[in-house]
Image (cartoon, rainbow, N blue to C red; front, side, top):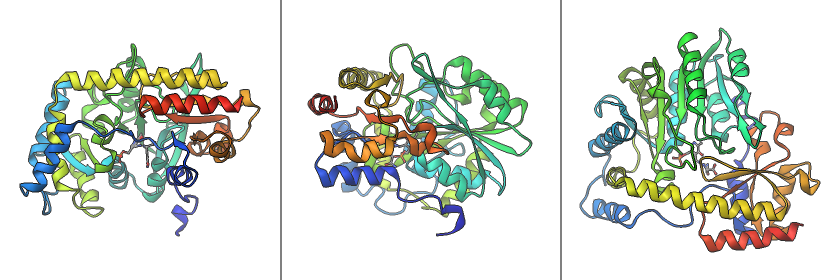
Length: 384
Ligand code: PMP
Ligand code: GLN
């Protein structure tokens, strides 16, 4: 393993899902639903396979039907217009979009500011691009992980190339407010920074929270690469269909890197995701309502079991604090959890540059069937 990757071992998701398998514990670790997405979308994939749509290499930027559907979705939901031929790129999940964007836009030695705790592929991809990561840490404040805008401003130097933003935010469940996003946008414009914004949880927002794409703010369209994914919105994480939207110049840059990573991603699924993106608003309202209920179900269970709960406004994760159990090491706590009570969770410590910063935080996924969440709540009470 080269020096750039030396600090990156097995991802926490592989470690904890393997632990769930070997112990038979309920897996509330890795974020994937235990119920597949809509039947008609699955049927569309079957139809595409059967009709020979996408069984051979699809076009590099993605099949035209999907690019058109992505552009139409951005227009319908956010009033953002993008040209499906030049401003949309289909990727192998958001994971590849993140990698390709960083490989395309970061020069060796450039600083990349990312919101910490961060999704684990960010650090690895910044490293592969030869960049230097600069964390700006979201901190608990009145029950919510909050971005300190002064800290963000202070983190920008002459070497800063890019802001890597994620909202709704994994793992904390924070949804950046319109005012916070406006401040980020102003900073990016003022300091002439590029922004890569990971908005894969765009549809999974609850209560009064609203997802506002960064690209909609003044001066942002020309400097923003927006990343989406069918995995989260449609509950098909195994299909690995993601996308990038932005100006022709930025999308062309990302595409240049993408060509040599995977060239293209699976064809038939692209046709099916095109249909998914055209689902009526009732689908999007439905998944949001369903997940909000599940958030409350698991949240109540965790509180009853003794966890301190940071109620998420988005994503399908709840970050908790394990201090009430007298625990000081989230990773150790998570390794022991299956044996103690038959549940698997993710230690947020791995999402911090300094694991000590997140040592009391543990993340639970609630994108699971109600009976599974009920059973998990019963088991977690054994910790008391
Ligand atoms: N970004 C974030 C914040 C995520 O949580 C995930 C998936 N867990 C991804 C990107 C990757 O998405 P995909 O499965 O589409 O590659
Ligand atoms: N995004 C999901 C999570 O945060 C899964 C990621 C993965 O398996 N790489 O749990």
